Length: 504
Image (cartoon, rainbow, N blue to C red; front, side, top):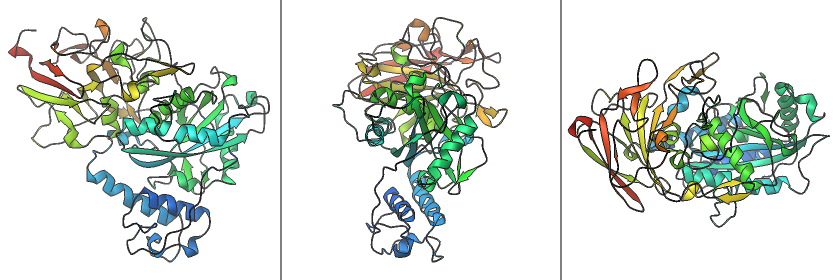
């Protein structure tokens, strides 16, 4: 069994500020292309960042005409919103599939350029170490990839997500420090009061519109880190909703990630918030909240490492599908008969194979990703799977990878307050005994949770390779078998055929 690294995350959070870490750039000269603020001939996230800096610096009268997207003669947040939409629309339409988790209305976009607001909150009775500055935290959280770093692969949140998304999510961020007005114990159980105090303090110096990359009027993501010395009994890292009906610079704040984290250990600090930002994008926890058996994780064994389970390891193909990180051409769907597929190494290139329970009714009809299906991905012990950091020491997750098969059940239902993944933790239908439907299960877990390698054949005799029945048990034949034909450094070849074609 894997060593315990994550405990249940409930829903809480917090925020506070002082000291903006960002540089303001002078506006570019006039450009004929609407939205081309920096006059480089293209409209990209760099133009949106430059316009945001302009508005913050109150230089709108001298800004280029190309920044006035609604042509009303005034530069304001409305122009910034239009520019962000102009950038995002072609990006999504160009190639990537739409994020299925949009059905849950998560606040943080999963593609494009996203800026994260981070706040280090201290208290009169408990403070973050003065030796670690907001500038250092900003460099640690949002710095470039550094494979040689002792903190790799969580040397930075930005670098982790750049690798996981194959460059389709670009994270930037600013870090502030704030000291709360009262001692820490006075805020326990009063999250609304705590967050409101922080946001109001930030509002004096921060332009919240900088953190709305998709122009929906809502801050994408806020991280609030309190001192690790407070412990996680009352300050467990978690992601939830700021329920107060307040706006800051006209922006709503919906999702916030909050909790105790040790800023002196960069890798562990980044691991915590990398996992929580997964929630901000709509992903659920895959580990079990209630344990009636020895395994405390949702996915055990070498093949079970996943960011939303262990806060370590790469995101699985199932997660990447739900986040919309694939192009349609990168997702191969089994449609019947005998078919052979080539899978790239997931740490090198995007790609997966899907076996749907219900095939699309007609050729060319889109797949319903909010349904039940198997996902095949080829994992290696590289990239985001290279190691986990415990007590700031690198530990190998596994030494050799192979084919992984995941059983996903992404049906959405109406929850008490909003739409939710029907079988997610804390959901209305969640089976606390862990015997029935879960959002994600690992095929082969009962056999140790290992990878499948060249020559292996997966049939109905393998644990978890069955569909759920009406009662929620895995008893319905998958109807197919999978043969692992070959595995090389960068390719895994598999053949899927009807189960009846060979004995099981």
